[in-house]
Image (cartoon, rainbow, N blue to C red; front, side, top):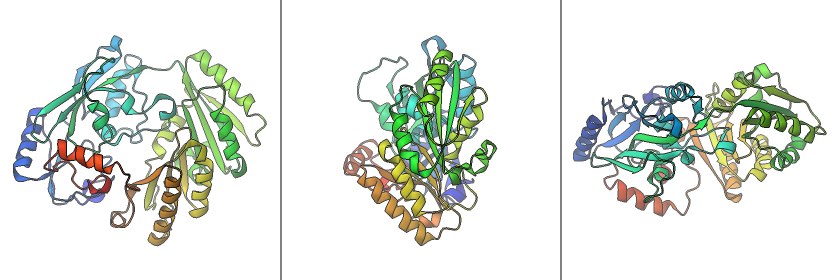
Length: 415
């Protein structure tokens, strides 16, 4: 979507530096005039968060997209952060390697955008998140200088872990200019086990999957409304829920795991299908995309994090509270995405989100809103319930960005 439609940025001028030196010049000039700087790569995630609290410039990093170093035998790669994830994927694939992080915006996301939001998908259960793969990072700070942390070797423990600090910081501490990642070999084989479930047996089946002898890398639960969306219609699934259990390992390991899981769940009422790679590639892709899909007319998408043991009961509450809700859960990780139906009123949505947020917090979790109508953001808990560690976040912000230049007002508690 155009930036002007996703945030109140009509008064912002977009500047697209050709290299790091030019980006630093822009930052120094903005610092002298106290202009805000809104980092942007491809713009695919500009709908997340609040509008900036003051005017300034959009600093677009799409030209900072170069390969810096790729010693494939060391299984690390160093690239500038403006590189598109699809281009990085193609580059790694030539060496039969990959970064096993799902991109919900295929063809659009920049690596820096994924890092700033710490975006992940179904594979986070087995392979982790971007925080687990960043071993070196370069940041353009508020003085217009490039600072570095970490390095180009996997065993790097010197100093404070700035890599993790900036991963998920939403661009509020500086602009990510370069990243070094550790990568993995492509799996020999993959497979997807699909189980059609009714509402009554979701919890018991999830409990059994959590204690299975197998080691899935993804455990995805979708409700009936989600299964009827275009991404999944070709699967012809009409049950209350469908559970997708994904495996990616060596060929023999995948074969053993699928042959083990199916008998473990053979007494569960419902249909069991096994789809082997490469036929399962579309399912993997669509499961990764659905969390960010803009369902026509849907005014709001939420993301809740709760204990994995509470996923079934929380999803049942959400479905009862909002009939027509399309739900997807990374059930092994305790992450639940929900797309509200188009006919829900603002008040109904607010009451439902308030209830679901309270329930998530009671489970020691939270609920945030990655997308909603812009005129709803003033009332809705976009970043969920503010936690006690907000004081630490503010101290870090004041230390690394004392002029509050980077994405001011857009993050948690309008930080």
